[in-house]
Length: 417
Image 1: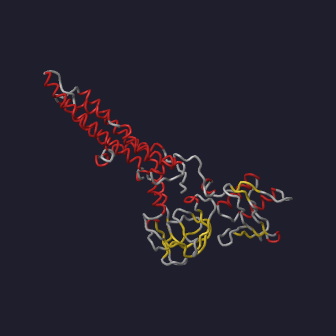
Image 2: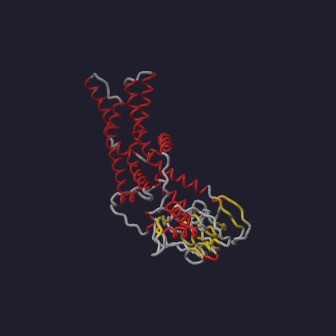
Image 3: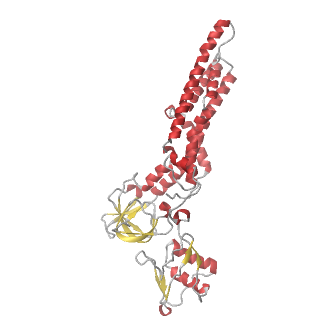
């Protein structure tokens, strides 16, 4: 899986995490983390005791009880904030993907051929069995199969493969994925998935770190933390009747304040581990997302921490999304300037990213500008998925062919002529 290299702004993520920290105070959500649920109950109890000390006679001074309550609320909110902040990046990535999906427009056809009546609809309105016409430069609105036509498709945003692929009706090269882009020609696609079932939807669900599965180690640690919390809760609960017994036996003093017992309980239970455990797991997934890797479970995150060397099955995974020409290699006896001029002319009608990069290379590296051809018989040959080449016919001078180029992502020669 190759994720887009988009870095969400830090400010909105922090502000959203601050709001989420209060939303997560819902007891129905806090009960999933027994340690922090105990702290939240203690926060509510000490707050009630602080109000009692303020309006009437409390078990201790208002300042002391209010200070303990403030620290307890800070502990709960800090744990919620850490978890929400760790989730923030994944949610921002998912939202950017959702916006990209919602903004795609599709030409829905009444029938399955190109010349049928078409209407513009958003990609979210497409259903299984609909037919759409996709032209050069359009984004594929949904997962489907090509039923008519042939086109070169840029799938780098999904697969990471830099070289465009040919998609045509029939055979095993007819499937297209929503979010990819058609570079040349046209195709008619039959949609094979309903909204919410597309590859992009599944990718969004994986990016949202809050939905990841816990590892066996995390489950075991949760059980251990819950057991320790229960033991210390029973221990602190018995201190109050013991203090009443000691008070009755000695005939003087005062029982241990409930505020002190709550503070002692929070100090004894593994509050830090319980509060940051989920945030640590989600932060691990966030680090993988920054490296354009999507982990579907906590086990995958743990395994990624032990990886020293990563072997990739194709060059597109570690290169830029579009192939770019970086150097012209002339044959013996050919001046590089003449080669650059021929390459530029042969690529002027090529609207693919690689073709445009040849024109830019000739202009930037060799100082060539697109000149007007004096020969009015010049005929440009556009790149198509059928011919897989482009060029220019100069009439009496013959035809110019684009030379082999060294690409930034692969060394496969560029065919043009």
